[in-house]
Image (cartoon, rainbow, N blue to C red; front, side, top):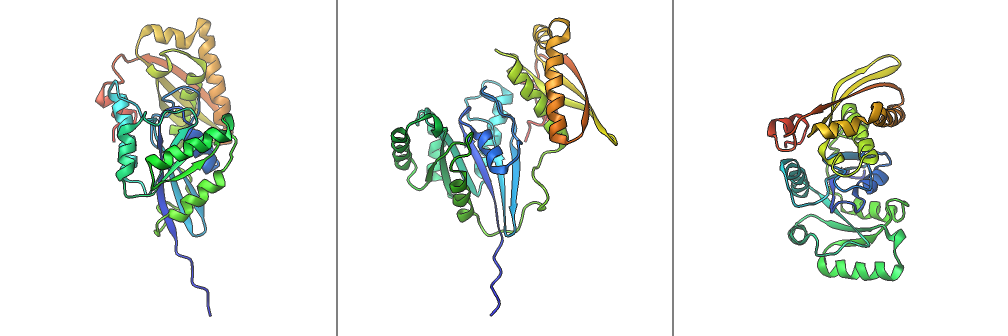
Length: 298
């Protein structure tokens, strides 16, 4: 008797949670590629980024989303729109918390998860910096708060317990054809990753308000036989920020550009010629037209 062919499963697994709980690190670990930039600063992720993992009879489409926050300006409101959309179109939600986060921090979103129809998996991240006793206590607390959810401790940084997260996802994936071709690993193009790499270096190299006042736009992206020619504009809100970004004698900008170029070369597996420019746009975080141009309007 012939074996019954396995039915194909596919679905959207959307990752949500507060800033700095390790959502991007978790997605990168689950996907096996660095698709989301990672820093210690809050609001590192601004866009919704998809990472696609394929098996013979399954496809998981992960989505990393911005950290949940109370919006102070239009950019942040648009970031929260990405989160709300991710909750609405999820087949499975990965709600990421960590060992130091207070459980009442996201009452509005926890209430949404209590009512939602799709499966919810709560990942308690960063258990490598906690005790087993404290982790067990947190698991009990989350079980009371979200009784229908699966509660899993993990360390995305140390890649601990990722197999159990993957198994929990696979068990709950709906039967469906693949949403993307099996050779596709993300919904973003190379221009997007170039801009994100530059923004990551700004987040790492500058402090205070500078990273949150910047946006990176790729103006030119040309692929040649042996290299990419990339020209990027970094928008800031004030002339003083432009001066800080460039630095004395252009040294700060040179450092950022060199670090970005080297990471791009590793990511693209090809030489990169990178030019960076800085422009002042005082209202870009509130300007709907500019936000649409920067990819923040749904």
